[in-house]
Length: 606
Image 1 (spheres, helix red, strand yellow):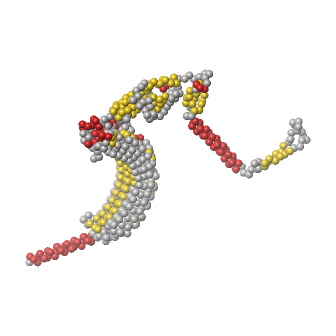
Image 2: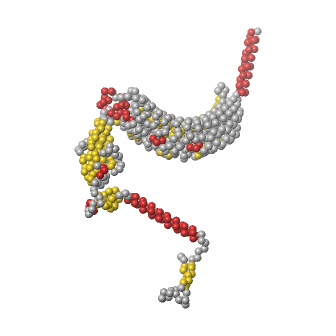
Image 3: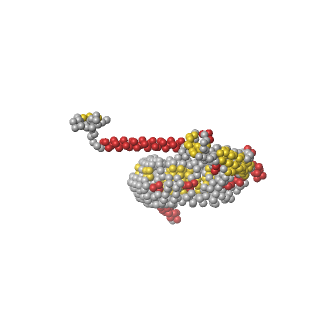
């Protein structure tokens, strides 16, 4: 009896197992050549050489992978029965056409991937029926244009990748309806300008990436109305060399990357509005200098990256006022030093990247090497390129006792200290010498009697060798000039005195010299040997330009008159080319008699 009951239970168990298997098989049919997982509701038909969407897909599937096949066309309502589908991958096919409403019925779809196909255009309505789509990838296709209202029914879309296409135009209302879009990538296209009007439809956009475009100027108001934008990435624009002063106006960015472009200087005017900026990356641009006192309006800046450029100097006060500044990355540049005075407070600095720079290890870098145990070099230690006893040594290799001898400077010293007192007359050229020595090489500055620094241009100018040149000296140039030689170890100065005698004038006559027009002042009854040249208001270049413009104006007036006469003559109809004129000849006495014979002659108009 017991054995009979056990046998019956075994048969019943076997029958129940068979029925459950059959039911599962019926409720979860797997198309041929596909791999199905009922536990995760996944269908994988990837790389099966399919030329069409397989039939018999289970309606409760959540993931469908059709990538890597030979699909060419998606028909209307192609996936209509898959109302539970959440992810659909159609990447790496040869799809060239998608009919309108092809995705109709996929009301729960969250992710749609159409990457690496052959789409040239997205018809309006092709994405209808996708109210809950969150992510769309149409990158690496051949799309030429985004038409108005292409994405209007995708109100919940949050991320779209449209990069690596052949886009030449984005219509003004192409992004209409994308009220939830937060991230947009537009990489490598043929756009000739920023699609400002189209982007202005994206009121909630938080991250925008524009990579590998061929635009050379970022115009004013390029990203207007993007008040929620927090991250802007402009990458690999080899021709971008100019940012207009108001190109980033209206943005509240926290992260800005303008990398691998052609900027020759830090765009200070464009950055000054970005008071919420925390992360700034200008790497791989041919920028040569970071100026002093020019970034202080970026009050919240924490990180500054300028790696892989042509950076030669970071001026004192470069990061002045940046109380939250934590990280500086200037690796792979041409810097020889970095002075402590560049920072608001080196105590706040946490990470410093100075590696792969030709650093001269002297007193200017002593502050860095003394903090070598506290500073984070991100695993890349700076190394010395000079002097000889420190060459190729990393900062961590130096002992504290040898720092004063290695990281040393020699105070600036003016070599020629002989008094320089020059007396001359107006119109003469004067030069004062100022040669200095020291380590590092000192900078030479000349100050006027009013203590104003002189530049390398103008009538009073500082030459490359440190000398001061006064051209065509005037009486008002009289005074004491101060030469100051300075370096990190200290400074030295010396005065030079100039006295210019004015020449009495009675009348002036213009003369022309090699450098242009000058005014020559002659005292009474003097000959030409007493002339003192003075600048004349007009030089030769100005006269030539004025003469040329006057001649062109004359020719233009004559041409206009001839054209007017031609059209006027045409409007008069038929013109006679001959005319007969009657006349009465005058007598030899000067009067006309009654019996005098009349005359006539014929005149031909040429």
